[in-house]
Length: 148
Image (tube, rainbow, N blue to C red):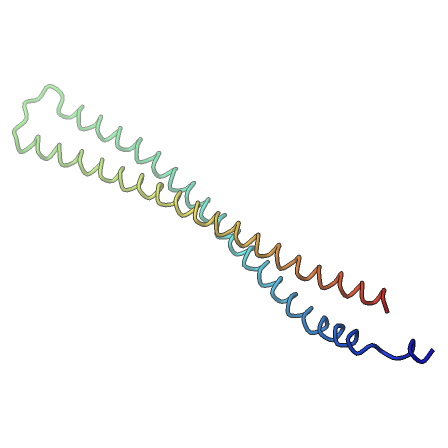
């Protein structure tokens, strides 16, 4: 009977250890969940920026087509000097350069989105692992209480 009333020192130490570890693991879990939320928000922002860049690219293509047609209409059936041809060529080259810049921005944003998606997946896995660690401690605590 005296044995039943005595507290097992290992059992008590295990309960104390679980009491110390639980808040630490919960803190880590919360931190991992916040990191996941930030990564998700950043990804959403990047998708919005990509949509805007794609719209800009479409508008630049339309603008280039209109400016090119305007230049052609102005010079249609006219004799041009070499200087005028060079200016026309420079205008077209600048338009093409601008279009290439916007296209490059879109491509760069796609690469950044892919990298952010990988970071988000890593953050999800980390948060899930932290949640499992908290759940394991909870199960261990329940098992100890059932034993005792």
